[in-house]
Length: 502
Image (cartoon, rainbow, N blue to C red):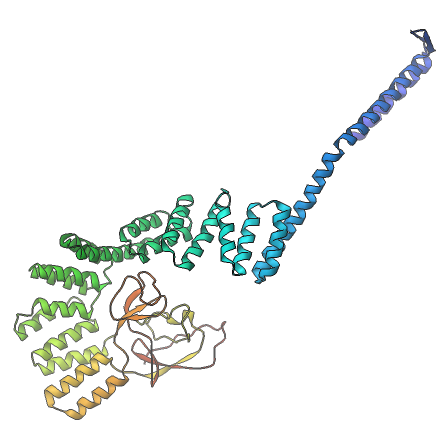
């Protein structure tokens, strides 16, 4: 199309030339005493030439006028390219862990780019990498004044406040971050964790509601967290003397976290103190269905302490019927039988307790102090997922726990006055696997009592009643069975084989 247009234009000029050549005509111009006689063709050609000269002069003049602006624009573009090149090199230096190089590129980018948002971020990261927390705080604070960097500035200041242990400032920053972006996971979780670590349980409950609303925490986990929070609120209400509120909160906590014994123990104890014996017994029996625990058995015995020994056995049979397969059920019945001097019954339940499955083995934390891979017996938790060494499964059971060994020693002494057998069981107790206890799923720390915050790592709602991983003379014992640790690490790509229990 462009070629056709050019040909048409040329043809028009040729036709005009031929026309003026065939019809030259005559033009006479008289102006101020000047007289010009020429043909029409020459006059048209002169006009075209004059117009071309004027256009050229106008173009030259416009270029001269626009040259300073064009020079400044090219200079800004060169500075912008150099600034972003320095910014990129600074980010690479931060990733490589070179604080001096990062600071040098950050200063160059700041000069060339006149402090855009990314320059502030690079400067703050370079300062943090170099250990200059004061300078990093200054840059993060400057980022708060810009809408596009306010959120990043809040995160940087929040991390600094947490590092300094300033929970009040950190909580304020986390609250502001959640207001800006309520669906951001780190902001919501930071606010929730700060509330629980500071014991602000009602605020933590509200933060948990927001976390569930924005799908930051799964509903099942949130339900359990809520149960733990309500239990802490119950204890706080009891400290303030609000017994009825404490009782109501403990009941709700028991319903939300049925695998935890402490809320049920607290509720049943309050009912017992109010002389509501049957309701206290029902609370224990209900909890035993999902969380058989020695504290529940001890409290159940306190509820019926006035009964005769044989009557107490009947009571504990009713409790054990709620979870007949649980080892704690057999232990509770054996204790009652020992108190009633029913030696055969006590021995029967102790043997069943020894044969029964113990509570689940404690999971190995993601970053243990000295991790080893473990081959887990069938039916056990998948403990070997995060391990890094190779282990072989032993061919025998490590035997009963410490508590069961001591109970068997009592039985041998009371029934037969067999001191040799008693000492044998006491010797076994010294080498036996530990009794179940509360173990943190985050750090592996152990605790005799349940706490909402792990006493070792302060993680929230991570303690569970578990059989701890135990290294004894026969090797590493898990879930009541023995495994043998091997020093050589296994290749990471090899799958962990499943082992069969002895």
